[in-house]
Image (cartoon, rainbow, N blue to C red):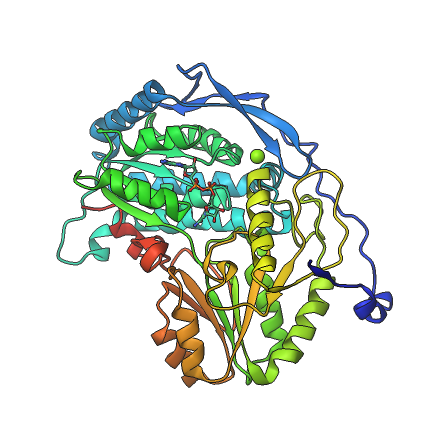
Length: 491
Ligand code: NAI
Ligand code: MG
């Protein structure tokens, strides 16, 4: 059984402060069609498959729109449009001109930022505060950043000639739908490639809005094609003979399938897969800041973050204090309506994902872990999960080893720096991690010994288009973002 927190612990503090009234962002001005077609060769085109699927609002369990399911013939059409655009227009265009188009996309995204943020929260369940302050501005920032590189590629690779790869197939997940589309499309275009992108089946709407923006930016037809569908559509892209490069972000399981499918072909690939990041708190850390970092690291975006700080290692001497402060803070987190500006934790993205989280938490309890959840109220409809922590877990526990992709934190203690490093590295993943300490030397020692692509010191989950992102081991291969992200799209 999970122990549940009680507001009583922190009641005094909050009675004397304030209770927030609901502050919902209005979706009234949002224009959504009832049915979305495929974006191929610059036009919205009905699928030859004639199939559609529904995308729902996970906070309400209501249908938002029907979305086309691209079959083989549709993927063929998208790849052939991308090839034509590559051969005839995009690879021939002066780089400076390519840059102008990418800038135009960035500016249109900024103009429509509010609309994009609301749709992102409706379709995927993430709090509007995040989609408004993180997803959408960062997505636009990626287009701005890579627009700047378009005519400077020769400086990025001194002594070499920058040549595009051709047609890129890009498959993205549901946790940062618009941002992942930007991560993939912006560098590909800047380097002179054309694109066939597939958003995740539970969150296709912002990619389709991006298709409208791309059309409004007058991008030559076929340079960006957006096809919707589920795993079969993704597989049709991966296995298509007309594709030169695959960029995938998603589960390690599907990443392995893709890697196998591409073995022995000339296709290049980058894979950004799962993670099980360690957040390490030393006794000399600023403890309240660290608590905020922990909360941000694992409860942010419902824990639907590949680099989420899902394992916490606390130095033994401060473990009790930190745990008390963390539980207090958990009690104040608001779970509910993603469109409410006060919401900290929105809806779990899908019923499947909710079931996966529930079953892993059950396994954690059966394995002897001590489970504690906040006492917040949950809406009656929709997919929700309370912020949850586990103590008394072993390195071998399933919830310590496996990616849960939900607001669930496994907490362990350590005594020495060496022990912390060893425990943190004891994982099949290596995407990210965090270190909290007052000592710069300790930061350097620990970060140089942890095998992860991204490490934060005294902060967590900070992103910037200029810095590369990617993993070690089962977390994938290749880097996205920054100058490194360019080489993934150049020969
Ligand atoms: P998934 O890996 O199945 O989905 C990611 C994308 O791949 C989607 O667009 C999907 O349609 C596509 N896809 C699925 N099967 C494919 C195939 N055989 N070939 C080509 N494309 C394919 O992830 P899913 O099932 O939505 O989530 C399962 C778990 O994966 C989560 O619980 C989480 O642990 C992890 N995950 C990790 C992400 C990350 O950012 N590292 C993102 C999403 C999920
Ligand atoms: Mg949806």
